[in-house]
Length: 112
Length: 116
Image 1 (tube, rainbow over the protein chains, first blue to last red):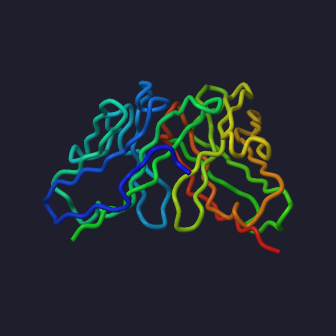
Image 2 (cartoon, rainbow over the protein chains, first blue to last red):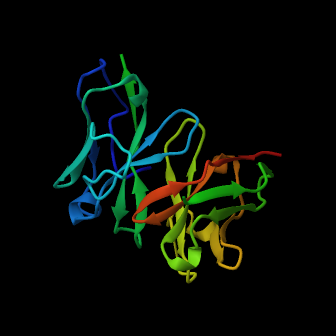
């Protein structure tokens, strides 16, 4: 099972702000490793949304923002739009068990 | 534009070896970066399988390490995954991706079903 825990689902009305948490431990996020976020639309491959905790790749709207503190990280979506309905995953590195890349459990965002 | 494309059998029998290849275009593997494999069982989350550097250096998910081999062929600009002794639990969409801690370019994914 994943060592990064996310809420299974979050929802919001169009225009609202939603946040997704990603809770880790002292061997991953708390150890200083960067957190990255991905958006996965139904039936498609994941797309990089945020890298290095808070950086947006070219083309990603500034409605998406990321932050990190202690052993957790968060993804915020402001001005929620219907097209934001998707699954979101956090990802980091975990230094236990000889080191490995780890993904969060995933969060389904529903636009009401 | 970097593009990745997975290929391989969509059906593998239990106890056999799953083999997939990822062809890369728009970027030379020899130029750098790690190249990884990630899988997603139907209706479930993402699981990192392992990654390889252009030099051939690898690191694997400890939970799969005993069954996984990832190799690179720089002459063909592609890298490959072999997963041995598969069971139904290995049924998943398998993705290849470019990575330098984060995965920035992904293939479209290929569904591999393990069934007799």
